[in-house]
Length: 331
Image (cartoon, rainbow, N blue to C red):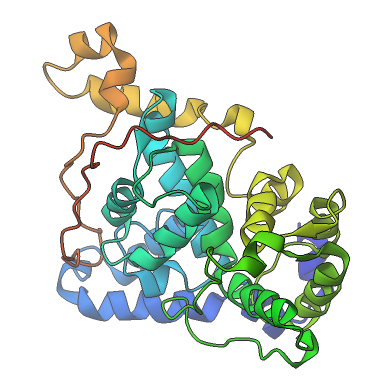
């Protein structure tokens, strides 16, 4: 049965909304690049497996960043994959630095831009040094907001700067550049950042922005709810409020609630099944199931089934020994 959303939209609008052309173009490109291998079992099987992987959200694994961030579904899939692959970091209570989290992101997307990881870490660390340690849940929920709403947040940064300087926010030009070319965020050391802006005026500007923004943005009603208890706020205070808001996390639909963040029975069952097939690991798994699931600092990279893995410059993922850490945020 067709969904009400599908019945209400013309075919071309529905296909555009679901970015079907993006996936068709990518499938054809991969078909041409791997035609010798694919010819052994047929084009029909290739397209079946490709679109099954799109539905399952595994199509973004080990792909280039331009594809990972190309559609909202790709972004949700990447967020979910990052959570499922590395949630044992949180289960074991490990605290990592920004560089170490960036190394984990590069295991799934070799050319993932460092700038996005830095911006996500800044939401958590605020005015602390960038080499401080962060819990997995703190980083994950901040990264979700920064990664999924990256273009929207660039526009918000421009509005915030204009409000600080007394300019008319209605004259702000919405950035149209790709996510790899982000607008510089307001400097934390500025006096204006410490004082912030009036929350009601800031929300009015954001409401107008959501009406005209072509990229994904949080539901305006939930943004208003997140700002309802404050009179003034800073830019990073706003981002922190978004990252902690239960309703915004549910509306995005990529991650579970914080209380369920470390639980994924389906993945646990699959890991146990796979590990049971590896000779010599059964005893160690029985003795320490959590240790068996924790990814090592330098795990081998597995290539994409359709596209060869692109090699990227190695990033130093070791902590400098800082003993500072962030507390687990409350929902």
